[in-house]
Image 1 (tube, rainbow, N blue to C red):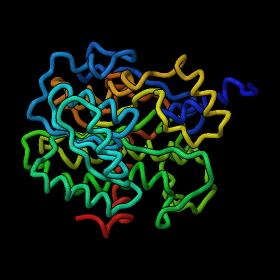
Image 2 (image 1 turned 180 degrees about the vertical axis):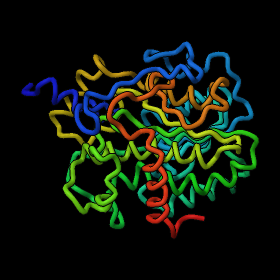
Image 3 (image 1 turned 60 degrees about the horizontal axis):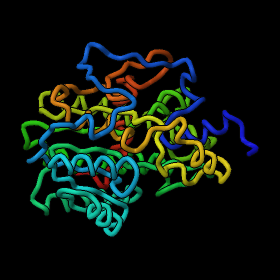
Image 4 (image 1 turned 135 degrees about the vertical axis):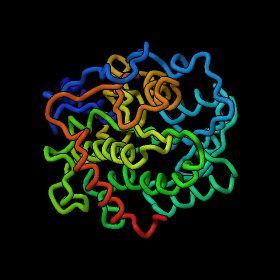
Length: 338
């Protein structure tokens, strides 16, 4: 097909953040963090398996990006177990169609993450429903293979994957603080330590000031997801609300739909050989959102349903970078914050 293995894996990596270059490169590895609860599940587990026997009645879970892929499977499993799921889509119509397709209680909400006002309006719609989410799964995201695109002067992948969720979180947290316990689950990626710029968050390039590399832009956004989670864990100490980041794995979803046709076609044709199914890909975020053993675990990073430590050059636990990122995110979104 005129495509080598490295190109194929690079295309596949776009679907779930597995990358071959960038921050730490192949030097960074993961080890299970035995200081935290380690469950019986792994890379082949599914969302249904990690919630087997659970009754989530009374739980209210907001899942962003519910209309396809990991978000749809996450919503399906949580609703199946009895949770009331608030599912967001870029339009209310897309969210409504997804919610209608699952068994259980699912309420659609509109959320266009590239539009900060939409994030504000989404949180307001939650309040109008008269329910308070005890868990938020920040699942939605994009990847692009094209040229630099700006949204209100900020690089688009960073806007959608990081800042849109940042605005949403800041509007939901006042509601969540009324509950005795809560969970925030940030869908990050191995790209956060394998594909991000070598410096981590290159703060002088968030508005496209420097050379644009779409792979690094995606890696930067996924590192930022992990760092926002880390900073939130610090800020939420003592509140009963936890914040953790996860990598779902290389998953057969449509996030690589903007890849060049040859690479996209190769992944669609052969992805099943190396990639997880959506049922397996959703397992880690579903597990972190529901596992009783993780009720007090915060500030951790999970892969294949287990807490892990990244060994080697990386910025995933850089507290100083996380604090600065929070300040920069506030500056970029200030007119839309409470």
